[in-house]
Image 1 (cartoon, rainbow, N blue to C red):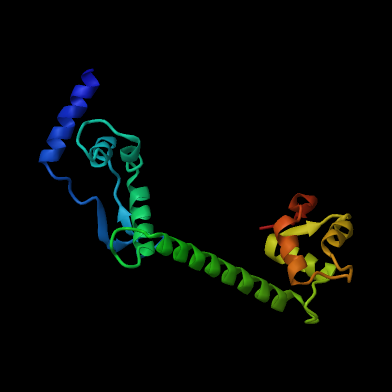
Image 2 (image 1 turned 135 degrees about the horizontal axis):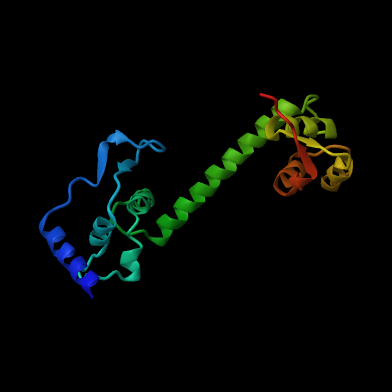
Length: 188
């Protein structure tokens, strides 16, 4: 009971005295220059900011707002989805955002595979041989195959032509049992 009384007093005082700047917008965020830096809030400040109705209790919806950096991140995400700026995300805006996000992801993935084939498909036959895949594993993942690599490789070579085409390599990249490989020991 005593704690509730102190929280209530703190809430009243905090409502009367405005908080200083919660984040410094003049400095760029270390991970994303478009996001402001958050300053650390005390638990009391977080509680007061999150208690939207001022009843000294947090509903679940209010509790979701206790993490200031999460709130700021979600606000920035919301604003990037709300294209017309009406503070409401329509189903159309939501779908368009995530379709673009998926398209961007697909484009990045395609670039990755194109560059990978350019670098490692030494004879440009649009297939990666076991020795070319060994080079990928070594250079990109710092892994070396064990004796059973040939058997594992052949499981991904669907057309049994001795190499992995783009689709076969994508499947390899996503589902290969990397635990079957040995790490390359790097001496520093």
